[in-house]
Image 1 (cartoon, one colour):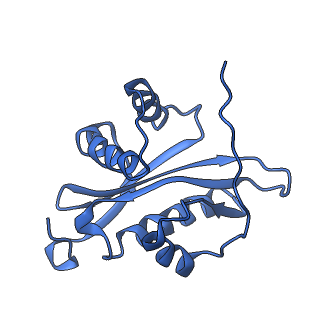
Image 2 (cartoon, helix red, strand yellow; image 1 turned 180 degrees about the vertical axis):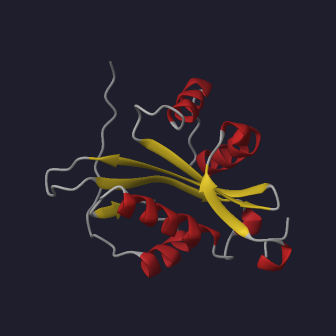
Length: 156
């Protein structure tokens, strides 16, 4: 699919339940990019959280002519360093045809807007050190914090 503004406006909007058939392949592409395989139960739980008002997890999609081009997932949370809420941009992915066309930037800017409206004082995210292509965009739209992420899986 060719992505251009001449082919119709690119709209960034809240995800709807009707988007699942197009969201799922984008989500699968995101997970494949990061070489992770998630059980279907995780995908279904993630999807259902977007529509649960008790959950702080949200999703936006970029759409052109009825076709989803990309997704972004984010969540609001409290932090110890600020009074205001923070916004963590958890997942960002565009299909291959949309890359380099400004779709990722528009999705990030839409998260900035949602975070501002929610009273957040910052938006932050992480990417893998090998994701050099995305870092070109990230370096234009945000400041690199310099922090290194450590993690450990905890088994029940």
